[in-house]
Every structure is written in structure tokens, then in C-alpha cells.
Image 1: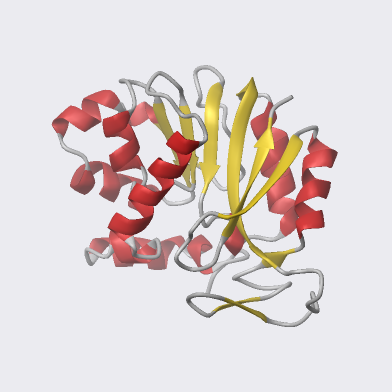
Image 2: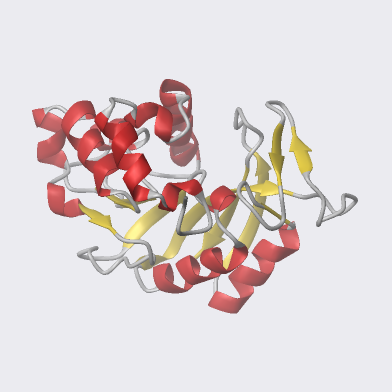
Length: 227
């Protein structure tokens, strides 16, 4: 059983899956599609090779393997709950040249959004399919802790499942195109757009609703901008 709000907190089971060679599947599959899609989207939002990027919930480096190749050396950083996932991605998905561009101390393992490992503020952060598995207060906590680690004008891009205003927040909601069913009180979680606006306001960020960004499972995306 998971000790946290989602199955990703069951670190023993995650480690067993990694040991069985399933580090791509465990993080949701769609390895090629979503890795490339995230990097393309970040570039469309202004990411440049010289920028520093924090990948929150980096897992086994689905985005990381592409971002490290595209960014200048030393510009990619990742954090995750699971040491096993990071280790698998670092060993199996990166070659020596990519590992040289992203040293091992550019990765942190914790369950509390502790970004103290960053040597200096970042320009961009992305949390893709993180807060779809967590309650709203986790997002607020992440934003509060991230603010001091991001450059003024920087962007944090978070995906979420949206419960539209006409739907009952307390009932399951089905998201096209893949038919994922989300809930207000268990994984996968959904939010109102006003929930995200509240989290931004409470932690001192400017909020931008982006919405549909072509996610294959219907997750939407929003930007939190450091003022």
C-alpha cells in the first residue's frame, strides 16, 4: 500500500518495477511522445540553451534525456521521490556525453519539494504529470518553496486535470481523448482553474492559464510566473 497520496509514494513497489526493467512504463509510458512534446513546448515558451531548467518529478528522465542534449552543459536539474527511477534513467537513458552535461549532483531525491540542491536560481521549471497525482496543498507548498529558487520573470509550468465549472467538483470527471477519470479526493486528482489561481495568489506568483497544450491524456497546463 502507498504511504502517501498516490502510488508513486510506494517506493518499494516502484523500485521493484525498476529492477524488472520497467522504468519507462512506471512513469506513464509515452516515452518518445511526451518527452519530445515537453521539450517542444518549453522551447515554444522561450526556453533557450543557456537557460537553467528544473524538472520537478523528473522520474527516469523522459524529458531529461532530450533536454540535457538540447541545453548547454550544466543547465538541467531534476528532482523526484524515487532514487530508483533517477538511477535507472541516469544509467540506462543517458550516455557518457549526456552524463557529463548533467552531473549526478544535479539531481535530488525528496518528498517535500526541497530545492536547496540548486546552485543558483533557474529560468524554467516544469512539473508534468506531478500534480495530477497530488492534492492541491502539495502544489501550494511546491510554489512556496520554488519561488526563492527561480529568477524574476521565470516560468513554472504545471500540468493538471481540470474540472470545468459546469461539472460537479465532487464527482468523477472523464477527460478526452484518452478517457482518464479524475477525482477531487484521490489519484488522479482534478482541480478547478480557480484553485490554481488561489495557489498562485497565496504564494506570490503571477498566474497564466494556458489550457490545452496537446497532451495525449487530456492534461492541461498553466504557467506560474515569478514577478
